Length: 242
Image 1 (cartoon, rainbow, N blue to C red):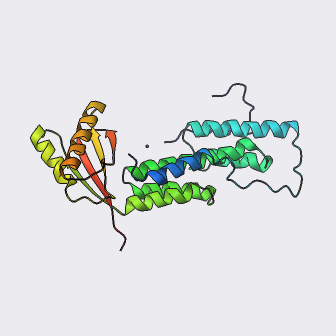
Image 2 (image 1 turned 120 degrees about the vertical axis):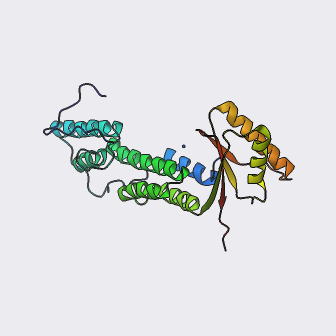
Image 3 (image 1 turned 45 degrees about the vertical axis):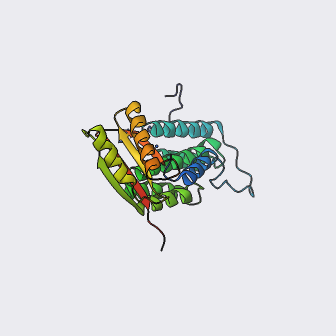
């Protein structure tokens, strides 16, 4: 929270509201774009010099930006519109089109939606991922992270997923189950390990790696992990283009 905030003529404080990578190249691209996206939103035209703000207007812009930051802290990004960070930043920009803080605020909202869309896609919820991505697109359809994220969601959507539960299996049965998941896999297949802790994750990854060696797959398995129970192994393969 900020101290000594200016007060708006009308109350504008935002109300409370209710991440090996599957596609390394795409994900890295998205992260790089997010980290360097400060200049992507259209900047005001310099054809006409901006009018200087008087002291009262400067205070109002600052108050709007503080209120928008509070809304962001409460995850009130853009819906409902009243009191949302998006609404407040846009109000600030109407008063001061050159406000770097407000422009960056809009960027931050888009980045939040992109990050949330990636999380949803990674758990297989592509419908939610698309809805979140569309919210970011509505703010700035030219944002450089929109395209790569949409490609990521599309790839997840066209993946074939199989999952087996490993909980309660003896060591021999565990090895046999993992080996069955490895049999006949294509180069585009990857795995996700769900286990109760890091030590168990490392053990399951070692069994997966041994299965690769026994089946003459001369490469390391591509796998990510999540701390989750019950223990399970997920295989994710992309559909081949035809």
